[in-house]
Image 1 (tube, one colour):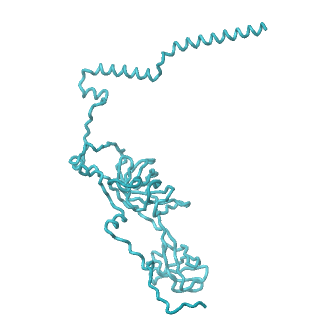
Image 2 (cartoon, rainbow, N blue to C red; image 1 turned 60 degrees about the vertical axis):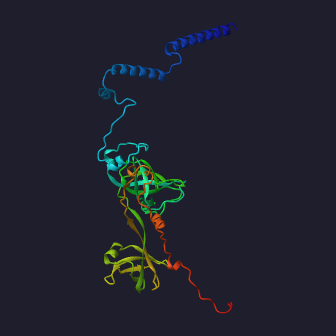
Length: 353
C-alpha cells in the first residue's frame, strides 16, 4: 500500500511538471488570438504604409515604374489595325474582354477534337453543318466533320453525332494548345426557346495527317461468263481505276465472293475477275471500299462587336442547308419509286382457288 501511494505521488508530480512546461511554452509562442495570417496581413499593411510615405511626393509616372499601376488608376491601350466599325459602333454598355494569344496561336490549321452533343440539346448535330465555337479567346464559325475510330485505327465518317457518347471532330481553325476546352452553339443571334449549347469537347491534337474516310459501294454487271471467271463492266471508268483495285475482294448480291484480277482494254473500265462459283448474267457485283473525305477550310470569326448599337446580338454567319430550304420554301422531291401508284381495279368478284 505504501509503495502504491508513493508511485501515485510521483505520477502527480510528473503531470504537474508537464503542465507548467506547456504553459510556459504557450506564453512564449502564442500571442493571444492572433494567427499566422493575421501577422502576414499586419506585415503587408506596414509595408504599404511605408511605400505610401516613401512615394508620396513622387509623380505618377515614376511611381508606376517602381510599384506598377495602383487600384483605381486607368490604363491606356493602343491597338493597331483595328476596324473602323469598332470605333464608330462602340457601345460602352457592352462588355469587352481583352486577352493575349501565344506566338503560335496566330496560325490556322487542322484541329482534332473530342466532342459530345449536350444532353439537353434537342437535336443531334449533322456533319458539315456550320457550328460556332468558343475556343480559348476566340469565337468563330467553322464546318466540322464528325468521325469515330474503329478498332483497326480507321477514322470512319459519321453523318450525325452519337446520342449519348463522344465522337471525334476535325475542323479548320486557329492553332490552340492541346487540352483546351470549348463549347459550340448553332447561332448567337437573338434568343432561343430550347437549350442553346449544342456540344462541348476538348482539343486532342494538331495533326492533319489523320485521314477521314466514308463508305463507297461500287456496282458492276457481268457481260461474259466462263465457268468461275467473269468479265465485269460498269464499275470503273478507266484502266487506271481498275489498276488501283487489283486484288480487291468483290462480292455478288447472292453472296458469291470473288477477286479482281486484271483490267481489260475494251470496254473502258472492264476487268476480269474470278469467283468461288459460276455467276449468272442477272447477278450484280459490288465492291465495298473507303473514300477519303477532305475537311472544309472555313474559319469565320464572329464580328458581333462591329455591328451598330442595338444589333450586336443579331450576327448571323453561314446558314445550314435546312435553314436555307426553310426560308426559300424549297422541299425535297420524293423518289419516284416511293410514290403510290394507281392500281388497276379488278373486274368482277375475286375468287380464290
